[in-house]
Length: 123
Image (cartoon, rainbow, N blue to C red; front, side, top):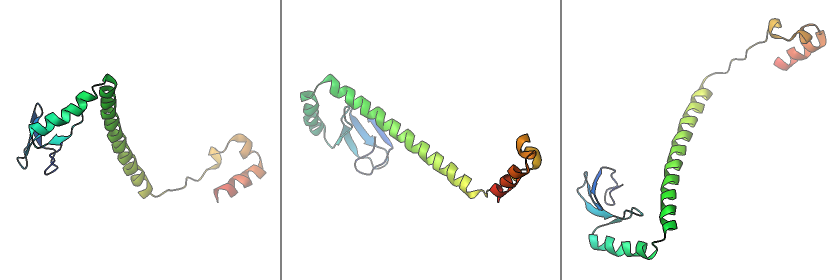
C-alpha cells in the first residue's frame, strides 16, 4: 500500500482507513482493488461499483491478478539476480584449457591424423 500523496510505503491501516507515517495524509482504500480515496464518502460511492459487479468470478480474478503481480515481481527479482551473475561471469577472463595428450581418447592418441585435426581445432 502506497500513500497517494507522497508515494511512501510506510502506511498504517485500520480497516479501510489508512494514515501515511511520513506525510500524515489520511485516506481510505478499497479492499477489493486497492484504489485510494480522500474521504469515506468517496470510498462508499466507489464500493457501489463493486457491489453492482458482485460476481464471485470477479473476486477470483482479482485474487488471481494479485498472485500474478507477486509472481511478476518474483520473476523480475530473479532476472536481476541472473543478470548480476552473468555480468560477474563476463568480467572474468576466459583462459583456454590446453588439452594434453593424456586427456585425448585412445583412438585419437593412436591416430596421427586425428591428433593433427585436434591440434588445429585448438588454434
